[in-house]
Length: 391
Image (tube, rainbow, N blue to C red):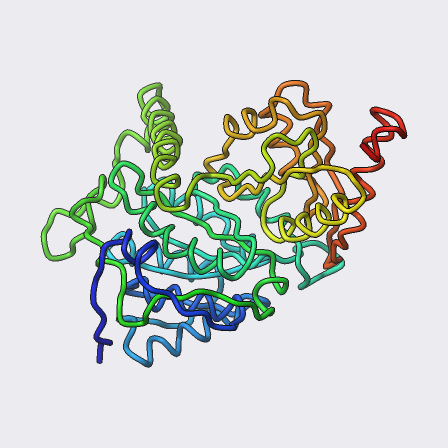
């Protein structure tokens, strides 16, 4: 039996509804978001540290919050199944991480190419040999150009809010793209923290596929077209042009999402101490570690600002350039080996020699605040001499 919940405007659910503080894990925050998301269907496949969240969503199905739920054969099958459900006009949810992300990789650009507003949570973990289930977000680098929007949550509160708000953004007719909501696994998924939740008896308005920019598959109203052939099946200039134009439209749709990200998430980034000459720029859990490092540096007389990057795709290049226009040093701590965020920031700012990519930890290592503090001090010493480290 379906749960009795009242549909409310997104703005009311996000900003106006009263909230109560609870003490839950990030995995539980995922289930709480889906509970209020008016989701039609979820498909699951277990992989650590994502498994618990989808187990809890199975409980929601048993309680009547979802119309359908099942376990797929593998991660690729899950992503194909939710794709089909979305093509049929349903609001869908799933989650994965690490090797599961890689196994399902083909489906993510398929989601974007077919303009489906699927929301997927990624609880990031290691993917390389030697095998690791520990926190690391290198998989985000592999997803940057799949066409999906990408939001990076700092903590369980962000995780809850971003999942719900991703639906409101993704389903806009002029956007209609998939959205990935990312956290660094274990640090968020298996840690309890205070999360402010709206009442359980309200939910997002139902998804209306009639507002979609692409037709919904309807088996009862022929003809149903699966692919726009013959253009894409011919090897000629017209075929290539049609394909390139569609890719450009996907990119343009992500750009159009910016106004909705500002509306529902308060912007693509947040800036603290905007007049500082030194900034830490980070996303995800590295933001929390940066906050502690800034406290330590402040106690030592070094003023440092913070740039919290919430949207990875679309990337806030202009906002970062404006926020750091007067900065002398930009330090970018990351939970991955490759430094994908530092590369993005370097491509966004003038005089990118100001950007220091580090510290970087991976393979499950933690990032003590001292690592960031030392990175800042070493960079100041290398660039300006010892006298700047205490000014």
